Image: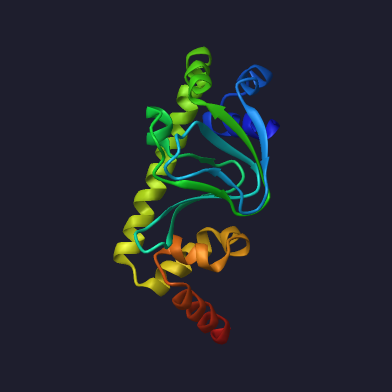
Length: 192
Protein backbone atom coordinates (compact mmCIF):
# COMPACT_ATOMS: atom_id res chain seq x y z
CA UNK A 1 0.00 0.00 0.00
CA UNK A 2 1.78 3.01 -1.34
CA UNK A 3 -0.25 5.43 0.79
CA UNK A 4 1.63 4.42 3.95
CA UNK A 5 5.01 4.75 2.27
CA UNK A 6 4.04 8.15 0.86
CA UNK A 7 2.86 9.24 4.32
CA UNK A 8 6.15 8.13 5.91
CA UNK A 9 8.08 10.04 3.23
CA UNK A 10 5.92 13.15 3.70
CA UNK A 11 6.15 13.20 7.51
CA UNK A 12 9.87 12.38 7.76
CA UNK A 13 11.11 14.11 4.61
CA UNK A 14 12.97 10.90 3.76
CA UNK A 15 12.65 9.38 0.29
CA UNK A 16 14.30 5.99 0.82
CA UNK A 17 12.30 4.32 3.58
CA UNK A 18 12.45 0.65 2.57
CA UNK A 19 9.06 0.40 0.82
CA UNK A 20 8.28 -3.32 0.46
CA UNK A 21 10.36 -4.30 3.48
CA UNK A 22 8.29 -1.99 5.69
CA UNK A 23 4.98 -3.13 4.21
CA UNK A 24 5.88 -6.75 5.04
CA UNK A 25 5.23 -5.95 8.72
CA UNK A 26 1.57 -5.14 7.97
CA UNK A 27 -1.55 -7.05 7.01
CA UNK A 28 -4.25 -5.53 4.79
CA UNK A 29 -7.78 -5.83 6.17
CA UNK A 30 -11.17 -4.56 5.01
CA UNK A 31 -14.14 -3.81 7.29
CA UNK A 32 -17.77 -3.13 6.50
CA UNK A 33 -19.64 -0.05 7.72
CA UNK A 34 -20.40 -0.35 11.48
CA UNK A 35 -18.12 -3.40 11.85
CA UNK A 36 -15.96 -3.38 14.97
CA UNK A 37 -12.22 -3.75 14.56
CA UNK A 38 -11.62 -3.74 18.33
CA UNK A 39 -14.12 -4.13 21.17
CA UNK A 40 -14.04 -2.49 24.57
CA UNK A 41 -12.95 -5.03 27.19
CA UNK A 42 -10.98 -7.22 24.75
CA UNK A 43 -7.20 -7.26 24.44
CA UNK A 44 -5.94 -4.66 21.99
CA UNK A 45 -3.82 -6.57 19.51
CA UNK A 46 -3.55 -4.26 16.49
CA UNK A 47 -2.67 -0.73 15.43
CA UNK A 48 -4.49 0.52 12.31
CA UNK A 49 -3.39 2.80 9.48
CA UNK A 50 -6.38 3.92 7.40
CA UNK A 51 -5.82 3.39 3.68
CA UNK A 52 -9.42 4.16 2.63
CA UNK A 53 -12.46 4.93 4.76
CA UNK A 54 -13.05 6.18 8.26
CA UNK A 55 -12.76 4.74 11.78
CA UNK A 56 -13.90 5.99 15.14
CA UNK A 57 -12.75 5.21 18.67
CA UNK A 58 -15.39 5.38 21.42
CA UNK A 59 -16.39 4.08 24.84
CA UNK A 60 -19.83 3.40 26.25
CA UNK A 61 -20.63 5.38 29.40
CA UNK A 62 -22.62 4.14 32.41
CA UNK A 63 -25.87 5.36 30.78
CA UNK A 64 -25.20 3.30 27.66
CA UNK A 65 -24.29 6.31 25.47
CA UNK A 66 -21.38 6.05 23.08
CA UNK A 67 -18.78 8.78 23.63
CA UNK A 68 -16.64 9.26 20.53
CA UNK A 69 -13.07 10.26 21.35
CA UNK A 70 -11.32 10.10 17.97
CA UNK A 71 -11.86 9.65 14.27
CA UNK A 72 -9.34 8.49 11.68
CA UNK A 73 -9.63 9.21 7.97
CA UNK A 74 -7.16 8.26 5.25
CA UNK A 75 -3.51 8.40 6.36
CA UNK A 76 -4.41 8.51 10.06
CA UNK A 77 -3.54 5.96 12.72
CA UNK A 78 -5.92 4.58 15.36
CA UNK A 79 -5.72 2.23 18.33
CA UNK A 80 -6.04 2.30 22.11
CA UNK A 81 -2.32 3.04 22.36
CA UNK A 82 -2.00 2.27 26.07
CA UNK A 83 -3.72 -1.11 25.71
CA UNK A 84 -1.80 -1.88 22.49
CA UNK A 85 1.55 -1.23 24.16
CA UNK A 86 0.71 -3.04 27.39
CA UNK A 87 -1.31 -5.93 25.95
CA UNK A 88 -4.16 -5.12 28.34
CA UNK A 89 -7.86 -4.97 27.65
CA UNK A 90 -8.97 -1.97 25.66
CA UNK A 91 -11.06 0.78 27.23
CA UNK A 92 -12.43 1.58 23.77
CA UNK A 93 -14.20 0.16 20.75
CA UNK A 94 -12.90 0.92 17.27
CA UNK A 95 -15.58 0.85 14.58
CA UNK A 96 -15.67 1.43 10.82
CA UNK A 97 -17.85 4.49 10.12
CA UNK A 98 -17.91 3.50 6.44
CA UNK A 99 -16.39 0.64 4.48
CA UNK A 100 -12.73 0.88 5.42
CA UNK A 101 -9.44 -0.64 4.32
CA UNK A 102 -6.57 -0.59 6.80
CA UNK A 103 -3.03 -1.77 7.24
CA UNK A 104 -2.86 -3.54 10.61
CA UNK A 105 0.28 -4.22 12.63
CA UNK A 106 0.73 -6.35 15.74
CA UNK A 107 2.74 -5.10 18.70
CA UNK A 108 5.55 -7.60 18.04
CA UNK A 109 5.78 -6.44 14.42
CA UNK A 110 5.59 -2.81 15.52
CA UNK A 111 8.54 -3.28 17.88
CA UNK A 112 10.54 -5.15 15.21
CA UNK A 113 9.75 -2.45 12.65
CA UNK A 114 11.09 0.27 14.93
CA UNK A 115 14.32 -1.65 15.53
CA UNK A 116 14.91 -2.59 11.90
CA UNK A 117 14.00 0.81 10.40
CA UNK A 118 15.18 3.78 12.51
CA UNK A 119 13.23 6.16 10.24
CA UNK A 120 10.07 4.61 11.72
CA UNK A 121 11.04 5.79 15.22
CA UNK A 122 11.19 9.34 13.84
CA UNK A 123 7.97 8.84 11.86
CA UNK A 124 5.93 7.65 14.85
CA UNK A 125 7.39 10.34 17.11
CA UNK A 126 6.24 13.00 14.65
CA UNK A 127 2.83 11.33 14.26
CA UNK A 128 2.39 11.22 18.06
CA UNK A 129 3.47 14.85 18.44
CA UNK A 130 0.87 15.94 15.88
CA UNK A 131 -1.85 13.81 17.48
CA UNK A 132 -1.03 15.11 20.97
CA UNK A 133 -1.12 18.71 19.75
CA UNK A 134 -4.50 18.14 18.06
CA UNK A 135 -5.90 16.55 21.24
CA UNK A 136 -4.80 19.46 23.40
CA UNK A 137 -6.30 21.93 20.94
CA UNK A 138 -9.62 20.04 20.91
CA UNK A 139 -9.80 20.01 24.73
CA UNK A 140 -8.98 23.72 24.86
CA UNK A 141 -11.59 24.56 22.21
CA UNK A 142 -14.28 22.51 23.99
CA UNK A 143 -13.43 24.18 27.30
CA UNK A 144 -12.90 27.79 26.24
CA UNK A 145 -14.88 28.56 23.13
CA UNK A 146 -18.59 29.17 22.79
CA UNK A 147 -20.12 26.09 21.17
CA UNK A 148 -21.13 27.88 17.98
CA UNK A 149 -17.65 29.33 17.53
CA UNK A 150 -16.08 25.92 18.22
CA UNK A 151 -18.30 24.30 15.58
CA UNK A 152 -17.44 26.98 13.00
CA UNK A 153 -13.71 26.54 13.63
CA UNK A 154 -14.02 22.76 13.41
CA UNK A 155 -16.04 23.09 10.20
CA UNK A 156 -13.38 25.35 8.67
CA UNK A 157 -10.46 23.10 9.66
CA UNK A 158 -12.04 19.70 8.93
CA UNK A 159 -14.74 20.10 6.28
CA UNK A 160 -14.31 16.46 5.20
CA UNK A 161 -15.61 15.29 8.58
CA UNK A 162 -18.90 17.11 8.15
CA UNK A 163 -19.53 15.26 4.88
CA UNK A 164 -18.57 11.80 6.12
CA UNK A 165 -19.44 11.54 9.81
CA UNK A 166 -23.04 10.84 10.93
CA UNK A 167 -24.46 13.70 12.99
CA UNK A 168 -24.87 11.66 16.20
CA UNK A 169 -21.20 10.58 16.15
CA UNK A 170 -20.00 14.08 15.32
CA UNK A 171 -22.08 15.59 18.13
CA UNK A 172 -20.57 13.13 20.61
CA UNK A 173 -17.05 13.99 19.44
CA UNK A 174 -17.70 17.74 19.72
CA UNK A 175 -19.31 17.43 23.15
CA UNK A 176 -22.76 18.46 21.85
CA UNK A 177 -26.10 16.73 21.95
CA UNK A 178 -27.34 15.62 18.51
CA UNK A 179 -30.28 18.02 18.93
CA UNK A 180 -27.98 20.97 19.60
CA UNK A 181 -25.84 20.14 16.57
CA UNK A 182 -28.97 19.91 14.41
CA UNK A 183 -30.15 23.34 15.59
CA UNK A 184 -26.69 24.80 15.00
CA UNK A 185 -26.65 23.48 11.43
CA UNK A 186 -30.17 24.76 10.77
CA UNK A 187 -29.30 28.25 12.04
CA UNK A 188 -26.19 28.35 9.81
CA UNK A 189 -28.30 27.42 6.76
CA UNK A 190 -30.85 30.18 7.57
CA UNK A 191 -28.08 32.80 7.79
CA UNK A 192 -26.76 31.98 4.29
